[in-house]
Image (cartoon, rainbow, N blue to C red; front, top):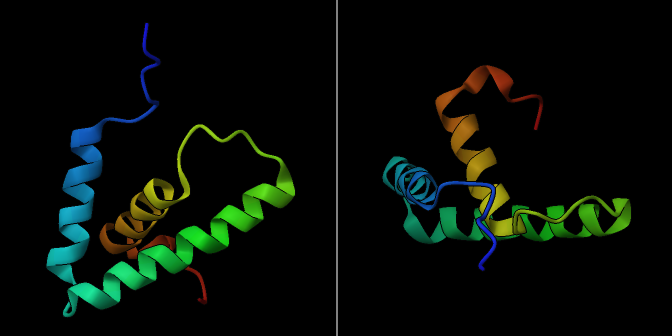
Length: 76
């Protein structure tokens, strides 16, 4: 029996499309997602946190949340 991921793949796709459509440059947003995922990967590796969601997926969810809810963005 296959394990069900802790997220909905249609929601992931929708959020990725929102990020791409809101960006002025598709390449740049892709690089930003990759850089955030890479940074989170090393942070998670150091913390030994539970790895239920891949870093790229987590980066997409975080960045789309920042896009739709700008009040959660700190001084980045």
